[in-house]
Image 1 (cartoon, rainbow, N blue to C red):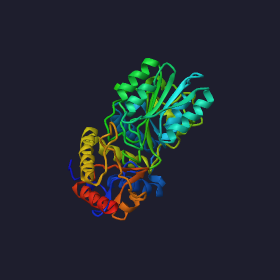
Image 2 (image 1 turned 45 degrees about the vertical axis):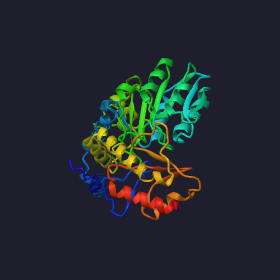
Image 3 (image 1 turned 180 degrees about the vertical axis):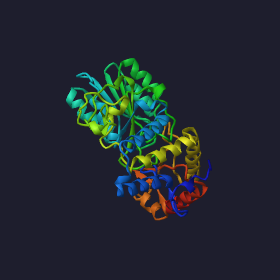
Image 4 (image 1 turned 120 degrees about the vertical axis):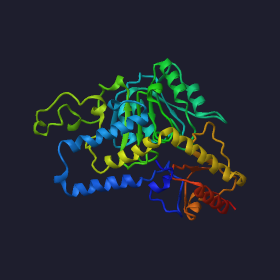
Length: 378
């Protein structure tokens, strides 16, 4: 396929969008797929039952499985990362007095869930924090022990871009008999992930960031040992025989096979699923290894372009696709807003500037970013 990735998006040349960790733009093909579904909803007699209720979700399941490096039978469709995390929490039973481990300043949805489970089970929520130049991996490995029952972690910290060595962490968790639950929202599709090697109990990702998909759509991988677990809701389409619309009131006790029992209600998502399919299909066509290598080159060039301004690329074990720049003393607190006036779009997190490109960014964006930073910091 063409390497002119920018042409696949509706990004005006004068706009430099470096904020994928906030929200990834939909590719044009995804927009068109979603709009076609809206047009079909305006003429509902064209929506064919039961086929159209099942074909889209199964295609999305197949595409998502390729990103996880696993099987479609282990993929559930969820509306948000928080839904997937709540599903995980419902199916885990930490012992009273044990510890559920999270990271300092972890994204709220991956903390609140575990606070509630700790209160309900009598477990304790423990927070692992980095000290000095310590990596997140070392902080987690130092915190794991016989008392650890659940590790609820990301692959990449959302605030500073620090990367976690999940293979090492998973090995340490297995030695202690602890469950591993992952929120991959800030990494899946941009950083290689192998569910067979890491073997998490549950791993979930929202689609609207690095998967370049729509809001209110997510994908979740569930390990074989949990496939007979308890779903968050009891919806009709997740039951055996749901393809036979004429017999839906012959209520079934059994669930549909694989991870489908964990699917959200109305999972057919006629306006969301087709868009998500096109977005993830694009990433699979390009290949995650290629995405990761390309973004590593881009973040390196972005960091180099502002180094002379006293801006530091100094996060230990920074993820290649995720740039969180330390700002010089006296940097304006509204730096992101100032850059926005130059049509350069980033996020500011405390004393750091989060700069997160994707395939659509090019040399012109790097130059515009550097020029805007110089103007804003001078």
